[in-house]
Length: 163
Image 1: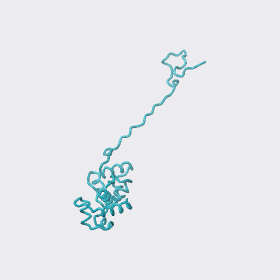
Image 2: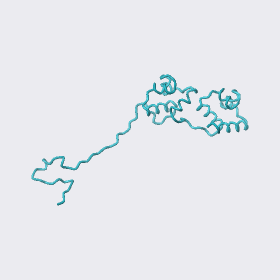
Image 3: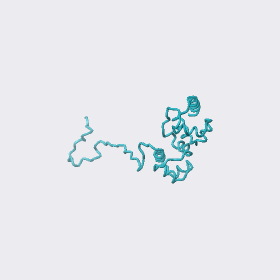
C-alpha cells in the first residue's frame, strides 16, 4: 500500500477534522537584513568617517577610542564630525584603523608628503631625516620650487627604504 505524504489518508472523519499535525512539517527561514546603525558611513571618505566606521564595527564608544589614541572624547567627536586630526596623532589613528585610509602617490614629492603624513612628522623632523633645510623642504612640498634631479634621486632612495 502506497501512502501519499501530501494527501493524508482519508478516514470516516470529515475534512475539517483532519489534524494539522498530520501534514508534513516545513520551516522557512530568511536571513535577517543587516541594517547599519544611524550615522554608519558606508563609503568613508574622510579620516573621521573611517574612524567612525571602525569604531562602530568594533562596538566601541568614542571614549574607548579616545583612550586608545590618547586624546579626549571631544577630540574624537570633532574628528568624526569633519574636523581633521593633528599630524602628531596620525600614527595612532592609522594603528587603530589597521590600515592607511589614503593612497600612496607615485611621484616622489607625493610619496614624501605621504611619508610625512603617515609618520606624523613635522617639517623640522622630516628635514632632519632627509638632511635638507626646512625652507627648502617646505618649498618642495608646497610646489613653489621643484627639487633638482639629484635631490629627487636621493628622495627616491630614502623613500624606498622607508615606505
